[in-house]
Amino acid sequence: DDRLARLDPALAEAILEETARQEAHIELIASENYASPLVMEAQGSQLTNKYAEGYPGKRYYGGCEFVDKVETLAIDRACALFGCDYANVQPHSGAQANAAVFMALVSPGDTILGMSLAHGGHLTHGAAPNFSGKHYNAIQYGLTESGELDYEEMERLAREHKPKMIIAGFSAYSRVVNWRRFRDIADEIGAWLMVDMAHVAGLVAAGHYPSPIPHAHVVTTTTHKTLRGPRGGLILSANGDETLYKKLNSAVFPGQQGGPLMHVIAAKAAAFKEAMSQDFVSYQARVIDNARVMAGVFMDRGYDVVSGGTDDHLFLVSLIRQGLTGKDADASLGRAHITVNKNSVPNDPQSPFVTSGLRIGTPAATTRGFGEEECEALAGWICDLLDALSTGESDKVEADVRAKVEAVCARFPVYSGASVA
Ligand code: PLP
Image (cartoon, rainbow, N blue to C red; front, side):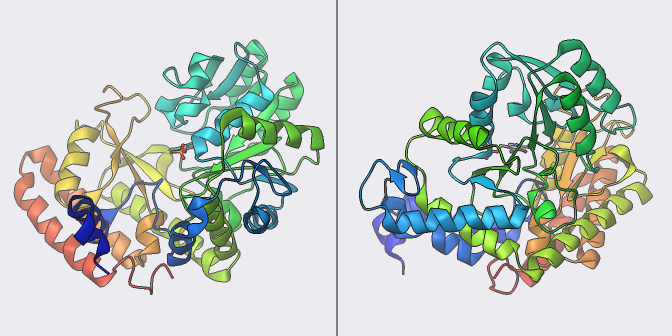
């Protein structure tokens, strides 16, 4: 059906261009993935029309009997998937899930302790331009010289500043986090522990990364990264604390949001069901294998991988020794139809807008069907390009790599039905 093209050609063209870009470029942004056809179908449903302020069985609008079923399915599946007794599936995004937890557990002016953005934390973990850094007294921990999470610094800062809430979790860290160690220090100083597992939620669901659920008072996540659902947020807990759960629910609605996005909640329910399958478990294992293979190629080719490898779906390449910037590398790879993002690395001499690093993640490429063979070749092409950038002869290499990228993308179409169905 070409209805959109007939009635709104300008919009149809832009959507078509983005669709073609997604098919013809290799996506290595660690926070991205391709939602399954089931997730897309649920999200594109008539549920978008429904107002349902409140929670199942306690709505402020009539006609909610069927969306109640949908939200209950999403909650029950989230609880089963992650081993929880509380789930709030309404946050519109990861940032809003985090904002709701802040609203429930701390007050403006209180001290919080989170991972700094420059070292791999998220904006909402206390970064200066974000609500979390503006309205709270945000103290930040980071990485050691070798790129591992600096637990000793985190514990020292916790004892010194006595934050009311500690935030664990990251947007750019390739190692297993010791959640237990965070909980121990939180208990010692009487703080809440919030874990934001947005990046690794899919690995956690599949059992390939330690779950923070037994350790944290509250866990937040997005649903669209490794978890491969629709864009959105989720709050979880297994604390058994009904008072806490009531506070969290009130912080989401009416604290932070109005009506829930029922079509997105339906898509979350679909994604949680898919995440319970054996296919999903083996998919997440491939995501990690592919990341390991790629990180290995970079190291073999003389590039520094922060912390010396990866245990999850991503890794950071430091270009400091080569004297390259993340900005130039990102732009050159973009011209070769490989999408990554520049990222600060430990001891980065460049500003956060320029950086000396790249963040590379495998969830999307693995979803479209790339295995170790494709990932090994791809990492080699990226190294070819970086080598050429160092010698200032990247034009020809960009063209060569682009041709190889086009060929492999044609072999692994995203929505062929085979890869993401
Ligand atoms: N938390 C972490 C750790 C993230 O990496 C991100 C997004 O990149 C978010 C939260 C925010 O999610 P959203 O973009 O849905 O607000």
